[in-house]
Length: 243
Ligand code: NDP
Image 1 (cartoon, protein in one colour):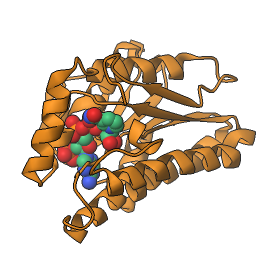
Image 2: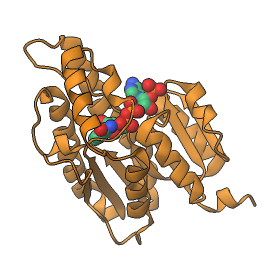
Image 3: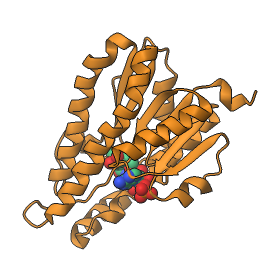
Image 4: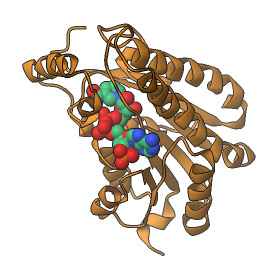
């Protein structure tokens, strides 16, 4: 048997760049077969990881997420881990920001995350085993300038994770919230307010921010704990990040 198939399937959303891509490499190195989801399929394929199914899926499409999970489970067996990582950060002042940017953030960061949860949860509940990792942010615990809507979506991720844990703990399922500070990824590039973007970039350039691998290592560490141990929340930020 291929070494990767002795470990259970891990699903990662938003695996085409940044934290998701680094988490894919980390979990693959740990020996897991993977289902990688994002819209940019070529970026998923370029990772070149073994025993990996890559599918171009928008996480806001619940049916597409569920179908991809079913396809991967038919190949590699039941999903024991999902890392709900796909997210968008469109910073800006509420008074200026186009309302469709609010909508996109809530659709991807909140509804997309729920779609990931629901695609794996019935199987995990039946097996009384599984781990759900939800990627939030330090902006899901406190406020920052121009983060109002993004912060709202990440407070929602924190809140949903806490409540979901109450739903699933009796089934032996762990819910883990990962809350990073600034990480060097493509996340900021989608912000459309150029002044806000430049200010945040200047902040990032002024300190030694986290790498995607730093966050992936925390996810790998949490997942590798015995199933009876849930690291409920990991908050990690660059040492030089003051706020
Ligand atoms: P990136 O922009 O590098 O990665 C975001 C990922 O999400 C990409 O793979 C992107 O893939 C995917 N994605 C976005 N929209 C969708 C969608 N509709 N359907 C499917 N996939 C989607 O940023 P990060 O790696 O930084 O972001 C990962 C997570 O980490 C996010 O939830 C973010 O909020 C969180 N985070 C990031 C921090 C940072 O400073 N970078 C700090 C704290 C939290 P594609 O475009 O191919 O669909």
